Length: 84
Ligand SMILES: [Zn+2]
Image (cartoon, rainbow, N blue to C red; front, side, top):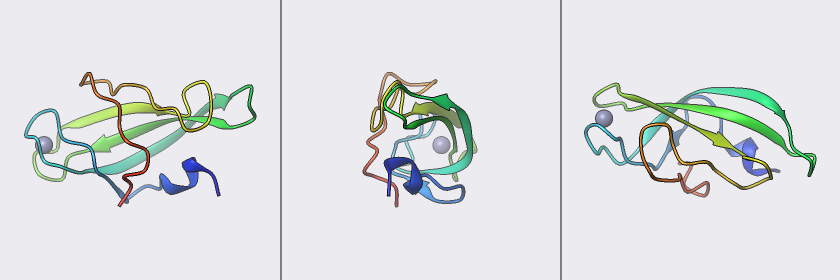
């Protein structure tokens, strides 16, 4: 079971919305971008706020497994252990 297996469309990630500060966002898309040198897979994760419908995204396994990029619309990095 890898970190990426937790990131499934329609699950929620506890990561505050950059528009309305709602505490969790819906995972709406998981797109494979390629393979890392540690043999993990790199993904783009798209998020949508269930309250105001604002969208955000980040890179999961950014260079190596378990590393998240900062999100597109914030200076924050999602905590990968907070998939609900
Ligand atoms: Zn929102």
